[in-house]
Amino acid sequence: MKSARAHFAQGEYGPELLRLMTEALDGAWLQAREMVRDAELGRLVLASAIIEQVDRGVRSPEALIESAKQALAAALRLSCGGAPRIADVAD
Image 1 (cartoon, helix red, strand yellow):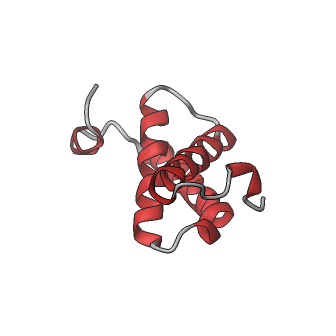
Image 2 (tube, one colour):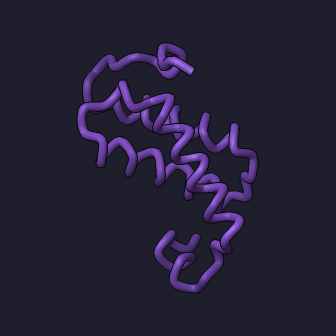
């Protein structure tokens, strides 16, 4: 599988797809921002999850947001040993 950098460099993420990814990141961040202390790292985890799902063919904004929030919750559980479950994040 190509890296996100390769996709961007080759222009494989067109304007519509970039708009979808941006909207998904913004939506996930609005719902999950209270979960993290480091905003930059939190957004990086969300963005990475969104890119991974887009590369797998997911195009539903809701599915991208949900998978990004789940990835962030999993990362928090690993780093904090018991961070809130994603169900605890306000919608």
